[in-house]
Image (cartoon, rainbow, N blue to C red):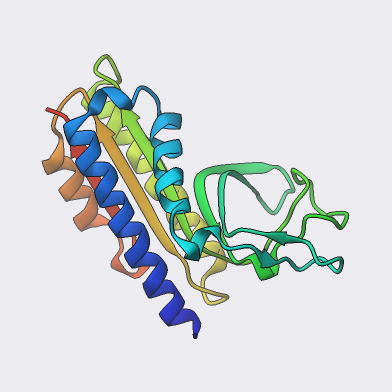
Length: 195
């Protein structure tokens, strides 16, 4: 399979899984106390797909294996300092190194190719006011755009933003953000309010 076909499969699988989370959140918002709960529930559903749970060889020379699905991935900037943290990342395992000493600061692994990033935002019933919450969403959009810009032309990935809201229904504001997002970034924004 070529990268385009693989990305379509990944996009469709993640989209379908996120839609399950949206439905579940709509029915049972009490299950989602924290963003970590949302991340864990999404991770669990994604792991049920072979595309994300199948062990594959890493780039290490000692036959190490890993899976593509990972959480809390840190990104280092050109300065070598921690720049971003992503909730869920689909890594191309063939580029993953877990055994060799890294040139840049790391958490004990490095990779240079990935297929998708999923950022998650959850606003609790007593959470930020609308304006502040929207600013946090904009910051995640900017982060995804910056990562996309940094690797532009090297390879492609699909950025996702999952927003769960227990406080208000700001669908109109999210639609406006979606419309303003640069379509070349292929950003997939999903929003669900329990209100």
